[in-house]
Length: 452
Image (cartoon, rainbow, N blue to C red; front, side, top):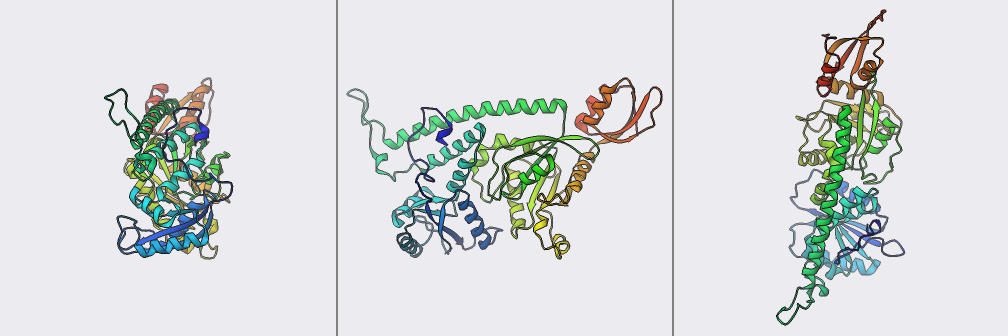
């Protein structure tokens, strides 16, 4: 991330580890299976997902193993026997980095590094590394660095000798001065404050952009879903945009917004957002809150599920959990579940497989689609239109032929249900108007409106 800035106020302390060497880093993956842990994900699917996360930063995975944990050890998380086994594996396979699929405390991370002789990163650090590589816009880079520095600040324990040195004070009575750890923490806090200020400017700018969209009052449709569920592919299919979409976890970090037309001509804004994942670090949720505000302001949410993934039910629960943290619920905003990747299901058993899927929570509709082939896209657009129309009212309005601008307004802000036969003076339109456009509609067509 440092290459994205020209700032001279870069803090000291721990720096990024990944991709600092000429060749791929040799990595061992450790997936703790903690007895009695409350999770809806199977241990096999957790292992597969963690391997996908590791591949996202292009390392060489030498081994990947599940470790049974009967009791979490405060010092190393896993038991002493497992630590000894990992040490032998590190030495035998020349492992440079151990990735552990849990959130480790600073002390647990330090002790594992000391005992095994390899660098150790936990799940949170790995996700931060991925986000650091994927962030493309200035806003994304700022948000990732803020999350990374908040994480680093919690790691500033007395685990390195340079943090125990002291700097001299001023004058005869200056005292021993501040320790290196205090200096590093102060530099981090100064950088965090600076990033907070810059992100606040970004937030204001995004708010102005949102206000300009609301001025023309297009409904907002937001895509959300577990990472790699196919949101960006679906976005590209619906909008014709060229958003980066690849079979990678967190392929897209930055929000993209496009305007599309629904079957009856109504125009809406559709936005693609960052994917969610199980145990998404709270620092990232907080840092990306400005980006995710697109979701909180949406009129309809499309929850994209990869139904070809055996773990899609548990993934859907994780998505709803993050939405809840953002204050979004089906009671406030209608949610359409998009069952994506049906092209990857067995064609002979697809119908039966879809019948076994149940929505995660309350939904306005469920639509099976394939972003890859385009199957079901028309049905999805119709479902969006129907969901928006559920809170709309129907009117008849008379428009003179000379008022072409009024006709354009109707096509841009309402759903045209029917058009009457034109006469010499004008034409009658039957339209459906949602609540956000009602005031403008009433003002513009005052005296020419009647209930349908």
